[in-house]
Length: 383
Ligand SMILES: *Cc1c(COP(=O)(O)O)cnc(C)c1O
Image (tube, rainbow, N blue to C red; front, side):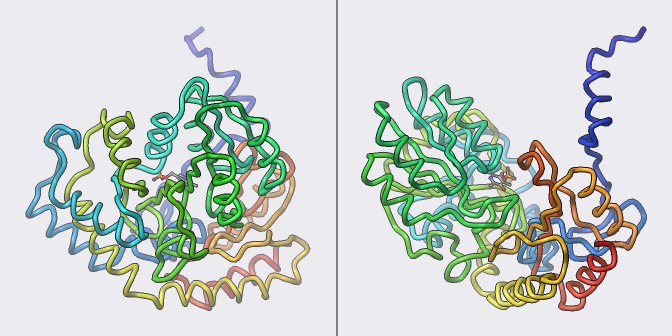
């Protein structure tokens, strides 16, 4: 027998309909993609503004590579911190209205870095049950104790905060929930944190670039400011490139720069990415028509899908989940759409709760009204 102790578990995943398969993309990201030799209409990326293949960003990357080379060569605290990173941090802080910002390689690493730097044994972390996996992992890695409260349940959270004896308390939440598209009540959460002496980490992976004035994100959407807020935005979704940042009070950001292990012990991202991201930030701000187009497409999809037996979850964001229920049925619906040349992923447990499998439709400013009509008629045909 060959040595393969994981075979049985893989077969179990397969049998339960939970095995996942990567589809190989052969074109740039966009509303229309080529997947395994076939042209498809795609509703599955987080490239909400359609910037991932923007000609000006392609040009910025090319110019950046020519000027700054390919690699950063070292971590930020050694010799990897380039003027392009520095300028981008200042631009990001100014954009989201915070005193200071710090770049991280990815949102996943930013969450791990923040939570483990600020907490640890003896601290208590409070997280929404539907938070992104990276926030849960961050809390587990930090060795703090993790309290998961029911989705959006402020009363449950307040009860747990009131009972807490921990010296350091941190509430962590998605601003826009990645598989549901709904929003956390950030002003109420900030007020609770104020009352109970806790920090609030806001993960705005799906709000940055999309929500608020000029796309400044969820805090701007709520016109919210608080010295207790630690803001995390990602740069590989609406911003179209790659990376992430954390913004907040000056001391907080300096502390993270000294202590966040996923910042200190890793190579800086290539400076040409920071160069392109500065251009991306200009586009996010100036091409407001992209957010207007998104709002129009969201409204159209919601009204056109009202007649379907499957219901959209309540969401005002480009993430529009169509609740199906059973994993197998969600996969069948996704396969049927793919048969018609339309890509919409089926999201299954453990990413979402059992019995809540869904089609996660995500819209982009790259889509046209006709694209949304094509999706709607395909869904009507297969429902
Ligand atoms: C995508 C995502 C992340 C991770 O960001 P990456 O830059 O892709 O690592 C973190 N939190 C949420 C809510 C996300 O959706």
